[in-house]
Image (cartoon, rainbow, N blue to C red; front, side, top):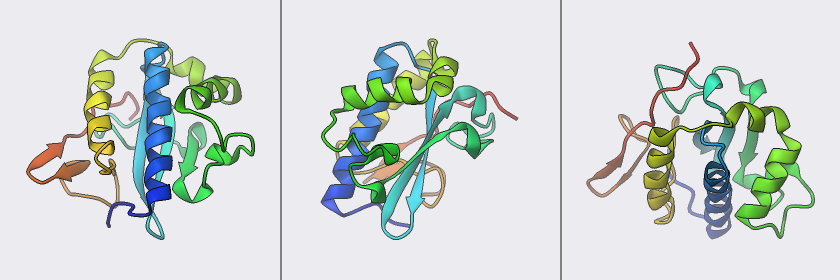
Length: 158
């Protein structure tokens, strides 16, 4: 499957990924993403604590019901919030902790290896190349020419 090409989808995906970066800076480094292809031509991402991510693959969920979900087709209504269309990544992070308190609480704590991987991933996203745990490249989450984004550190769930 291909990367999103619609400029609106690209900006939305970048903003929601930057929201997670904001949360990591605030101490929620155990918050993980499970990104992938969304038909037609979009991108989707689940946001969940590391305890809901597979040990065998650091970007795949165990239980989708224990995650918040965003699809670029939701436009600027992140997570179907009707009051998020003008929000920055920082404001989305504030709303995320308020509206998904269980996920936020379970995501509190340090995870330097994941936070470091996440910064590298953001470098790919800044070049409009988004991670895809399913529906993307084999053997990595993204590729820019000869540079590959490796899988993130493993999760904690079996």
